[in-house]
Image (cartoon, rainbow, N blue to C red; front, side, top):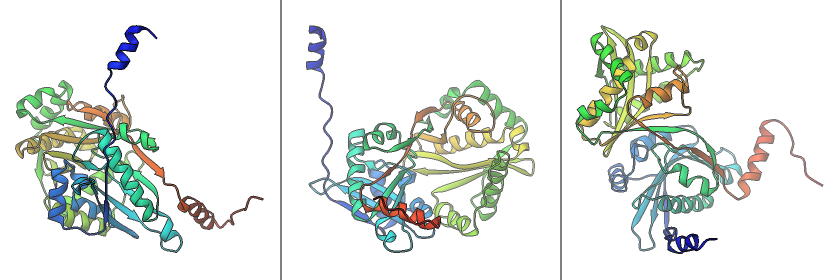
Length: 364
């Protein structure tokens, strides 16, 4: 090694030390207002809020989980939310729980080291609860690509797209690609209107148009009445989320569900008809969302995720291009899954054999 390289190596700053954490609290019930104030203070996203956590956990054999990570001195320095899935029968109910985090922990010190330390501490607490599998969807989690590999997660590549709203809306407009601006002008010229409809009727339109859009790609979705009621009660009636319905004349041709929390807005669900695509209703709805979010004081809007790049079709390729054209910055945010050490892994294999009607073989 050259003298210059040795000198550079000696002068290089040491890597940041992992923050030390103390007590971890795993709670199944919390006060909604107190929790939302905590995650707001920690810089958390909509995917950490109380209403969304209840919505995501409202499934059979599933409970919401609210996690607080404290520093050794007692200060809460991180918070996370998840859904805990518990099998019905013992011993699987004790040792084979699964946990689904939609986002990485929100941390007071917003560094990869702080998030890694918080998630590692949470994993240790989950093992004591009998959790054997952890999934992290990594929504609104720009650090996932730096955090999850170091903790041994198996990754699934994806991107999310962020638009900077911390400027006058006219300047935001200028960041859109010219083709996207043409689409929005086309919609305006055609008389397309995107208006708030946070009612059960608006929610039905959203799901009908979302289902229609997915059917064109060969994907069938059929939300239950209970799921629709929960969305209305927990997300819309609470004011956490809003629906924009796009009309071409009197005909509903597109719809978009988006949420706001703190200084961020995010797109959650959308759909459009073939006629809506022809009159550029999706472009109009997304731009309307950005205008409303900016007027409400949002500094960033997350217009959702995609898993591919290039192409202009209706699949993931076209979705990547559509979002990028809003002047959005695509950020790699891989999702991840991980098996925790313990008896749960063995018991889960036994459970799989039992479900298939096979008896496990014993090595001799």
